[in-house]
Image 1 (spheres, rainbow, N blue to C red):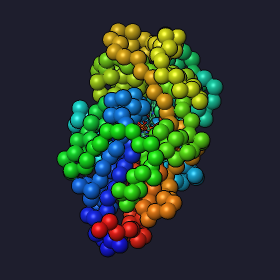
Image 2: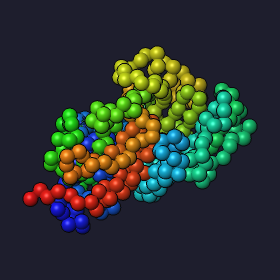
Image 3: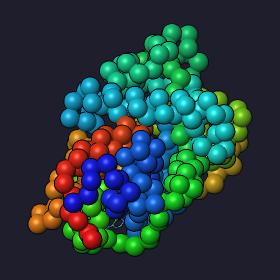
Image 4: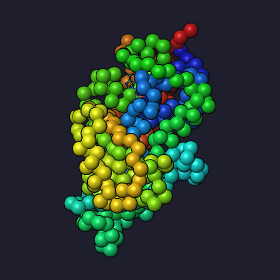
Length: 344
Ligand SMILES: Cc1cc2nc3c(=O)[nH]c(=O)nc-3n(C[C@H](O)[C@H](O)[C@H](O)COP(=O)(O)OP(=O)(O)OC[C@H]3O[C@@H](n4cnc5c(N)ncnc54)[C@H](O)[C@@H]3O)c2cc1C
């Protein structure tokens, strides 16, 4: 049995090299809960091939992600504060994190433009005036304005990886077929496998939500984000993400020409200057949806090792990344207080 405070002897595997896996590793190491040199990240695919890389990374909370509203708020607030600190470094070309003002617009309902978590977190959130609404080529009935953060995954993921490698975390690339196999070699296994959890955790509540986007080159003229009915325009660091689709229980990764044309037409109606932006790529990803997101610790059957789940973030995995990493870190700390088996 390990002494409770000897974390250097505790071996930890994190399955998943997306935003959830890397955030959990970094959070637990920064909080002093894990020792970097005893932490291994195992991922079948590198981040440039996974959902986390496709996301726009605009911080815009939903309500229905956690078991209750207060937990949702805590998870989002943890991420918001983390990005507030990173934004102050003023190196978005490295961290991917920058401040962004913008508009959420709806032709149908006020609820589509904001929610209770947004109202609690954004200090400057306010309804748009009739004059502001009239400035858009299409007429929207409702709108809110606020400032938020974007954590552009195409910068933020390499930044996270760099932070982990500098501290000595090991990365392995292979597919895990059964988490129980890892319990033989690791005291704690953290499951951040996104959609992979459907198989690894035998969890049928995990459902893919297909999302297609068009990435265009960013230009200084695109100064705000726009969410307007079915379309969004989200400027990151080098690219602007134009979207998008939400096809529930659809795992088709092919680019649809029809979706693409619809996205371009809808976004150019909101912001005509986009017609001049050079198109770069069509991308399709699968949001790993589960309601609620699962952050939970369980004991492996017939083993002294622990399994900590952190998956099912749907369309909110970037926004929830630091908050759920912090929750998973709390669980890892609690597991460490329990007796672990000796590997001597
Ligand atoms: C078009 C689109 C736009 C989006 N926009 C936003 C946004 O603006 N804001 C936001 O917050 N979210 C957004 N999202 C959602 C966000 O991308 C996801 O919630 C997030 O990426 C989930 O991250 P993850 O690390 O949990 O999973 P993933 O990024 O899917 O990573 C899972 C990891 O687990 C590994 N893995 C899986 N199974 C196994 C196995 N058996 N063995 C080994 N490794 C395995 C994979 O290889 C991968 O490394 C968007 C998604 C899409 C598709």
